Length: 315
Image 1: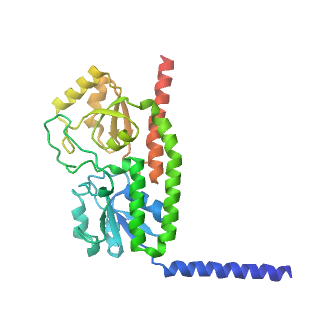
Image 2: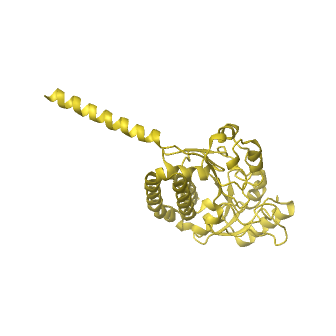
Image 3: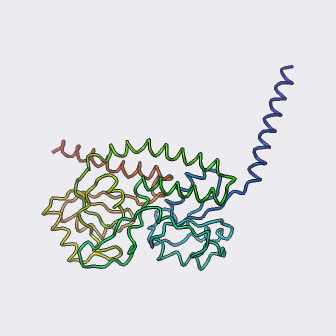
């Protein structure tokens, strides 16, 4: 009798498994292309296993200057949509993707070419020296994902768009979104605690990449090495920054990991300012998810404090 019951249980489990698999086959699994690693990470948080998500941007690339991954470009002919930031972030490279993809619905102005920036109020990008005009980012600061609150807004928009396109996945995507928001909210207090010692502390930054992060966590970025986005600093500009750091006793310099040290090393050598080097995107080191990006960034700030305390104790 026990053997019969065991056999029946196995048969029932197999039937349920086959039914679930049949349901998955019946549902079209969307193929989503994103312009950046961060939009890919947010999209994966929403879709889970319910879609194929690929980024045109490779790991550790600069979002402003991407060479679209040739393999993803090739596979894009079967994709259902393209999700991108907009606000001119991709303008310097997205045309090369449009020229190579065989998928007409992903091209500029097509219905499946979805721009996310309108969901967020863009921070302005102004001239740091009061006279140099920006070469890029004239519409505003496109690094919107570097505020976790914006990440929630973007994830909600992505979810709403996808469940309109693929209503058969509504239950799955909605469930995943709720879990993502719950997990992010649980992390916020930890991130805020890590950043609390830096509240209203003065920083110089290389560029405007971390303005959203600074606003969220109350960092005071008082100047930028770049006189304007896309404009390299001249020797005169470097001297201005060195003087400002010394005069105002500014302790920290924020740069992104994709900036060459030759662009800021002379400032460090002249002032002794503490370098805080941060990733702007998922894909750097062990960062695989959107939440891990902020774990990593806030962890760098926290470790910096520990190093400073140890240095003071050794003096």
